[in-house]
Length: 239
Image: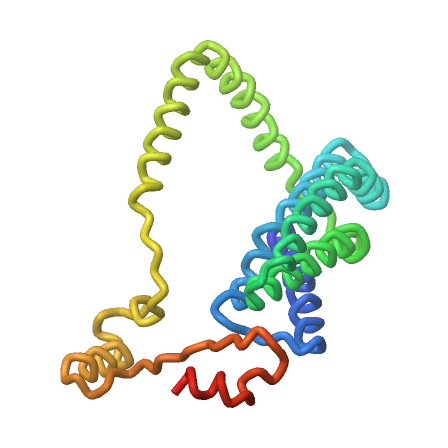
């Protein structure tokens, strides 16, 4: 329960803050920026999970709620700081794009990552302080014992099968690279709809009957000078 709700609540808070700020700054939602909340949630949920796991580990070791919270924050601060900074820089780098929706998506997501980091070490510890201490410690002990037995065995098998794993990994890379040649560039938004979607059916019907189609043609003319289209010679060339 708490292990899900606390990280999720922190992620939702980050999304609300970034999207609310975007609204105040006049950003608009489109096919690109609409995925910002999902990306922020996916990119930021890991830090909260690490903090909560450290908190539970310290409780299992016998620490008080306050001691477990302090230990979790101290242990995870620097790793979370560097991962959040690097992730935010990656998103903010999209602001250099000449495509406005991509640039907007970049700064919305970057703000969401920063907000998530701040909430991780302010709001989340405060929430942990009010959570009831897990009473079923045996369940945690059993889970920990299973993990402690499984991970060394997994590491041992990996070390014994290093050549096979390297060959398998190289084969996966080769297959993936071969798939790059099959990628298609698609600029038609109509293809994103199902074949029986009303808007697609109606549009294709117009095109089949040659009723001038459903799309307009837009031409961009650059006169290379301010108010150049007002000059007679340019207008004659367009005519």
